[in-house]
Amino acid sequence: MKSSKLFLGIAVVALGFVSCKDEKEIKAQKAVDTYVMYVDSLGNTATLDNNGNWQAIDAEYEMRSVVADSAIANLKDKIAAQERIDASRAKYAALKAKVEAEMAAKKVVVVAAVGPKQKLRNTLFGEGKVGDDMNFSWVNKDNILRVYDAFFQSYKDNKHNFSREDYDEVKVMYEGLDSRKNTVENEGLTSEDNAKIASIKFKFAPMFKINRIGAKSSEMEKAKQ
Image (cartoon, rainbow, N blue to C red; front, side, top):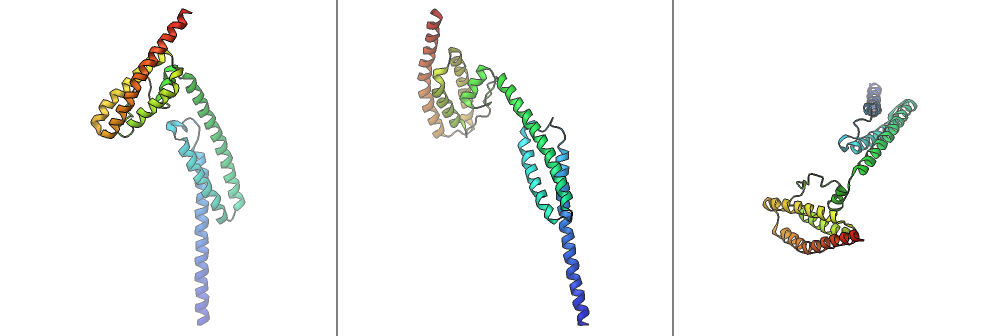
């Protein structure tokens, strides 16, 4: 009787072990299948770079790739699983190379299309922050002091390279920022930040006036020669 119970106990344990092992293999197989299907689902490159989502896609791919690699240890047919993973990995590598090449080509076109006025805006406010519409809605009570400070520092660093037309454009941009400040003041701008901005404006105004006059005089002298 005792031996029968012992045998039954061993059988239950063995069955549990096999069941656990089968469950691990099922999960492992699913991980490999999911990885392969994910790569297949990416399809063509036409929409992969839309809205700047390529980084998210690449990050998700890396995560799925790590999970698939880890799953191989729990599969009986490791060779077949590895071959499927390698095939998908090669497919993704080719896709990634194509997407990144297209992204690089787009950047070249964008850079080539940027005119002198946009280059000036990028210099003073950051890449793409201000366009032809002079929209400063991205400036708010929390960042306006940093915007003024960065504008003033960039102006000082680059003023010697500005033409008379550049100074005219700087004036328009500065007035646009000032106009936005009037709105931000009613949206909770702190008195401390407002005072610091006033200090920047106090230093900028006479400097800009002198530099602008100097640029105009320099152009007139060159025209006479």
